[in-house]
Image 1 (spheres, one colour):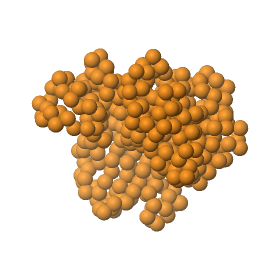
Image 2 (cartoon, rainbow, N blue to C red; image 1 turned 180 degrees about the vertical axis):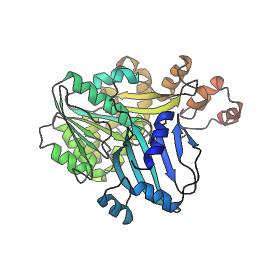
Image 3 (cartoon, rainbow, N blue to C red; image 1 turned 90 degrees about the vertical axis):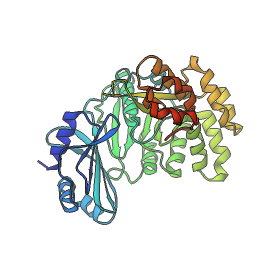
Image 4 (cartoon, rainbow, N blue to C red; image 1 turned 60 degrees about the vertical axis):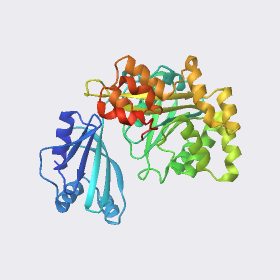
Length: 367
C-alpha cells in the first residue's frame, strides 16, 4: 500500500473534502471549508516526493521531472477515489487530493432548485455550471448526467481532466474520456465527439477559445452541451465567453449566446449554522427573450434585474438565494456575507461583531 494512503484514510475518516501535502508543514485536511493540520511532522522535500512517486506511473514521473503539473485520478488501496493535482513550487513538490464520492449523487440528494432537472430536458443548446474552484461544479454536473442516465435513452460523451465520478451506463450509454489520456485536449475531444453520434456532450472546462468555439458549434448543431467556467456570476460568465473569442467573432458569439445559451448556474458553498457541513447556494439564469435581447444589445449589466423578476421561471440572484437560505436557517450568515454582492443587506443577520466594520463600508463581492 502506498504510504500516502494513510493520510487519505485519515482524511476520509474525518469527512474531509481535500488532503493537502506540502513541504515544510504537516499534511492538512480541508474540513467544511477550513484547512486544518493533522498531528504529524512537517514533511521534507525528499520525503514528500517519495510519497508522491509511489502513486505515479513512469510517464507521470517523467512529466513531473520535466516541470509539468499533473492531473489524474487515483484509487487508494484502502478505498476511496481521488482527483489529484501534483505541482512544484519554491520549496519543492506539492499535491492536493480531492475525494470523489463513490456514489454518483442525485439532484434530489443535492437539494438544488427543481429547475435544474428541467435543464436536462433540453435537446440542444448550452447549459453552464460556474463558480470558483472547489464549489461543487463537478458534483452538480455529475448529478445532471445521472438524472439523464436514469430517465432518457441517449449517448452521453463526457470529457474530463481528470475523470472524477464514474457513471455506469443505465438507460444511457455513457462514454467517459480523459484529457491527456484518451484525447489531447478538450477542443480535440469535442471535435471527435461530434463524429460519435452524441446526444449530450459534457465539457469539463471551457478553458480556451478553441474549446469554447467547438462547444458552441456542437450546441448549435443539435447537441446538448454541458460545461463549466471559473466565473462567479451569470453576467461574468456571458462576458467571459464574449471576451475569450477574437474581436471579429464578437457579433457571432453574441448571436450564439442569445439563441443557444439555455441556462447559467453559478454556485457557492456556504457553511451550515452548526459548522459541520456546507450547502450549495445557486444563482440561476434561464435564457428568455428579454435576456437574449440584452445580450445582443451589449447590455448584460441589466441582466440581474431580469433574474430578480424571473422567479416564476426558476431564476434567482445569488444575494436573494443567500438571504432566503439564512431566513430558513440553512446557512451561517457570518459565512454567507463573504459571497454577497450587496453586503449591507446582510448586516442585520451577522452575529460576529468583527464583521460589522467591514459591512459598514459596504464592500463588494469577495471572491
